[in-house]
Image 1 (tube, each protein chain N blue to C red):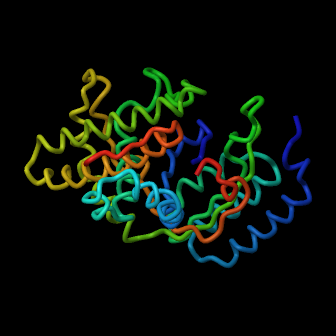
Image 2: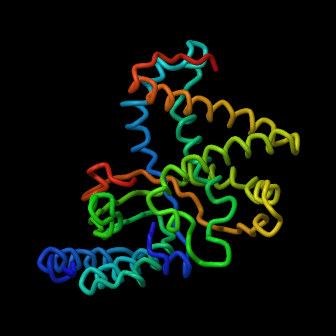
Image 3: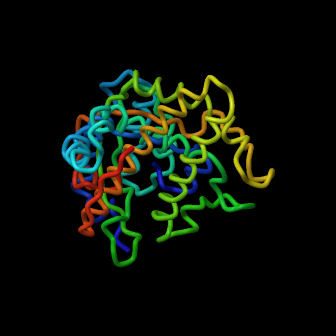
Length: 146
Length: 144
């Protein structure tokens, strides 16, 4: 097994440095936390903390950066490919879809399933964000999973 | 994203759609296919917003129903492995059709939403079916 942090050490060290520099430039706390955590992850291959930080992003800028999808590994389906995207949250469209989600709980409660399988309290489960991409690289730019 | 089960269980996920990339697809693929796939009357009503909103609604509806294998914290998609893609598409379509039916039959205030969504659903499916039909050499022009 080749650890990415070792195999791509030179590129990832550079990327981590740039992420930390970007973190210093933003005043948005969730993005700052994510960028710093992701910089650390690139150098130690432990992405858990930075993935949790990614889920917690709240600001107007959305950043995805790291090895995620296995689409290119057609042999074993385990090797992830790096991808990167920077996007701006489209507030109007995101608000509109959030308005449409008002019917979701009603639908969940009426699902044609056994009672124990329906009626889950959806709350804020996986909100749908609408983004406008301003940069894409790696697998994403190559027409990957997104 | 993310795909890590530990993260999904600990913090959930973020679902995002890139609006401007969908618009590029719309201009490059959907609109030209709609030229041959939709009847004139339907084509005149087709707008980018229809396609985008339909994609977003499908994403919303995907959050309905069981997400994990019963009694476990394992996502169903993870359990289905290679079949997850096709199964997910079928699940999405069935959920969408079912949601339209429910919205149409419940509160009056939902009927307008349901009618609008029905139109969008069939627009996008007509275009998708036309794409598949074209690949197989079949001429296709539904009359929705």
